[in-house]
Amino acid sequence: MMRFRAMRIEWMHAFLTGLAYIVPTGTEYVSELIRGEPTVVPSLLFYFLPVVIGFIIQTWSGIVISLLSGLLMSTLFIRFVVWPVDVTVHSFYTPGSVWGHFYQSTLLMWMLALIVFAVSRINTWHRETYRMKNH
Image (cartoon, rainbow, N blue to C red; front, side, top):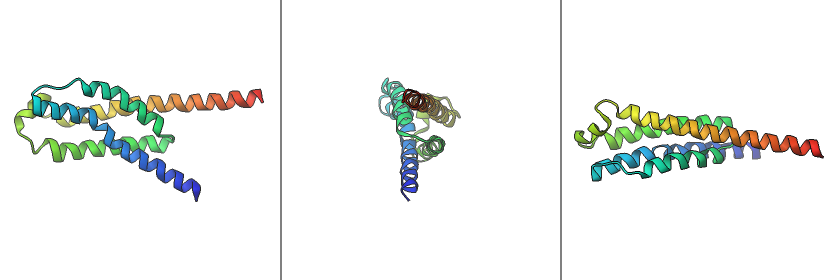
């Protein structure tokens, strides 16, 4: 029972991290919409958020769910936020590449999160094997 609860919490974390994947690109889009130029904040978030996601998620299934959730959140953001807005803002992404821009950002963030996750798992494994050798 406890293992099932832990897995459910892990998957909930993984699903909620999907919201984080749209933050950099969404912030860039809103900045372009309001100010007419992108802000530098998304690039800082782009490197910070995957590190946090990679440390929060502790299972392989969680990291896959995180990617799927990120793709879903990007799709919903584009469908309900980007498309209803004036077409002139879409020119920032060059016509027809809004989907590609958001999905590319999501995939790159996920790859960074995956690297942090893998390094974290390897570090944990190394510490456990080192501790077992010395005791």
